[in-house]
Image (cartoon, rainbow, N blue to C red):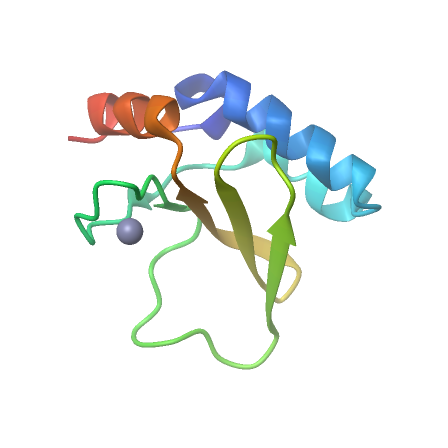
Length: 104
Ligand SMILES: [Zn+2]
């Protein structure tokens, strides 16, 4: 499932924030980014999702965290070897509702 199909508004927002942040190489991944699974932690404020298969344990070397500055909530990207692997989305009710609808 493509992020742009499942969450078009969030995809656009991520793209804009990455361009603004001077990360065009990450912004260019957004249109082809796939949602592999959503986070199953069950926290009511969590709308995070995986865009690469979930690692066994923690991310290894080459892992980078990039915190963006959205107008609402929190957005943090986990980047592994230059590829967006996980998008942490917190305190975004609209995104969470939509994510739960497409990935029960
Ligand atoms: Zn979670």
